Length: 105
Image (tube, rainbow, N blue to C red; front, side):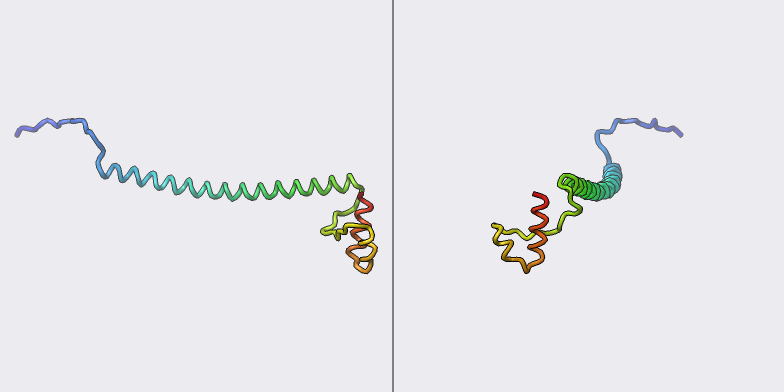
């Protein structure tokens, strides 16, 4: 019995199975990476919101210290002239707004 020598011929291309295996591995890696990216993007939004809140808090504290007031009102009643404030004397918001604005400015 004579045996034929095994030929180690260089291949010129990949087989279909090899390409499918590589594409499957790449798909799995992309899916894992995209999940991590979405988590990071969500965390970025949370950090930006916390930073905005800290900046607002700092601005309010600075305002209170600069103008020597205890609070910053949530709303003002603004009139164009002093007479408009005096005519709106029945409106408590107008009175409070006038008193606060005169204290600050």
